[in-house]
Length: 419
View 1 (cartoon, one colour):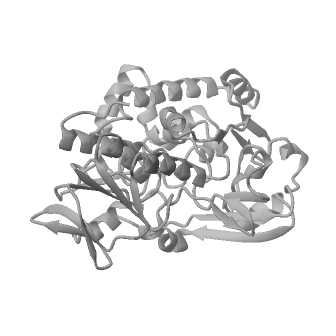
View 2: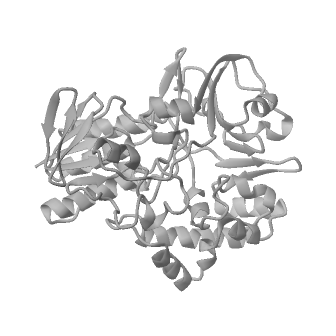
């Protein structure tokens, strides 16, 4: 049985690997290995051009694909005008630090988030049908953490000072469930050699068991009698028994010539990858924390070269205001690579330049991602979805790819994927 996978990002690669392990003949189509999980070499220096830290990928994937993570400590440092707050990996040390910084309710916050995350992992992570918000809310109530499902701003305000909020959520997510706080609150790590190593390692494993990668973008998903039957690449047609797209749902439905409206708007994010002569000079207060993710009002900054000697030079990567960041992190600049929604749309074939394929807020959460009633399927028979635009959402996790592969195996082979 042949499966065609559209997209060689981490989700497409993970799906391909597990489909092949269960006996499918698998072909991946993409002109860019890794998608947004990539390492780009500029002036001999390796930069993680789009995604830049790993935190949401389940341990079983990290171990299966031998991802060389670099666990910085502290994980994150919040740099405020009146205080510097490191988030240490050790829970007791982290709680003590936050309480000493005046965040008296942080222990309760951490307890609620921990219990909620355990619930998600136990019941709502590896699923073939995404849960509804109501289902998650009801289960959260059973274990006494229902307030995590309140609006994010309301939930955070109950436990943390307001000047810490945007270290836990992105602007625009204030009215979405606090579920998103738990989604992003993780043990983030660097990856040796840049984020492209994630995709490269998964691909090597997939290739060894017989997954084929064709370095081409597809031009069209072929549909006959409401059933996906193959793809067209230039003048060549490739037939398949099942098609899994890990591209954006909007791009997938365009390729299938299926008229469906997604609510997309071009976001205003900007990521800079700056190559420096040497490690930047900073004020004394933050000097000891350059190995961590640094959050301050001007943006979020990482300097992976502090810990990763496989970069070929000094790189500083950040999302935020360029002038404000460079004012605090001083050094001789050798090159600046700027990525925003406009050029990401072109480079990564990303409608509207949304890094998560669809916005991480209502109506695109839980079983509403990408649409109510779809889950990992589409209205077109044999056409499945398994990218960041499906549950649970964006970032580098591999969960959508795995879940969609598992559903295909259930549908086509009548058995579950057991790993």
